[in-house]
Length: 387
Image (cartoon, rainbow, N blue to C red; front, side):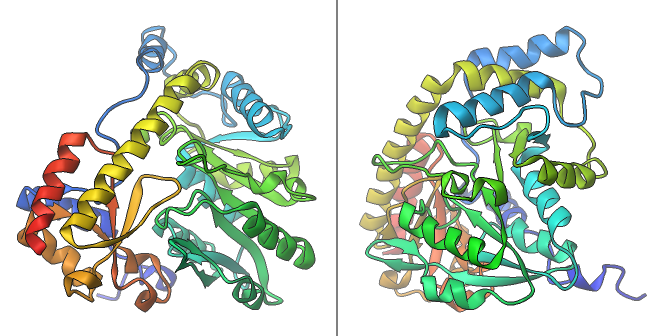
């Protein structure tokens, strides 16, 4: 039998998250690989979803999203960032940010086009670009003075006559970097100079630490009109399974995204949309408490990883710590990740799978800290065996 999978998708098999989660189940290891929290979101938000179901709102909602959620998203962008969007024509609801990014790339890039990504990158980006028939050009983030950043010259060198999009993720998964205004200005300058569109993934927009500011690329000079911004409720309100996201952009971009999205899933769960609309307007104090809690958990995990012998990079945002395995005498992240459940009873993600140039990330493991303190403590105790 010939290979049934189309050629452009043959480099993608089972995701590393599925592999490592299955390994955790099989070995009974603590799973610090997949990024989902151990606790749920604000109680009243959860009750709003339940109340909506009990009220009988269980059929297809409007394809672009219920008006209440689109209005809440527009109010959030205006109140937090000073960005004004028309909820009727410039806000669009998606099945999580992953679909938002996918629909945007599929709508805006095609065969013969190139999409610039910053590696390491969230794994769906590469698959989505391949689905579009486009090609990716990776710009490497490297550790500089304790955080991952890019070389502006390498970014400029990645642009060709075929470049269509720059895909930007800040706060960045998996590196933990929050791009500075200066870094964003470099990206914006390239977009303006070469007439490129930016698609930004900002799902961790609230989850930044140590007073680090998240700056949306769309707030920079002449960038609102060429930026498609994607975010979601999953990380902000600790409901990753709800898969409720949104896209904000000028109306022509929204029409393009809607043209694709309507044939992927058409609509997003009505009860979750109504609950998220409530949360955006009422539960931001809860989110601030979450942010503080996650910062403490980050520090707890870093202290433990460094005591176990890893070198760590303190993330400015997200759920994840990058740990250098070389001080422990290891050099292959994939090999160690597969052996770690047996060696220490812990699962992590090998960062090299998020690179086009895997040698740049071969010595890193990604650990998630969005877990209960006792889970982090037990994982750290187990990892100390590696010494």
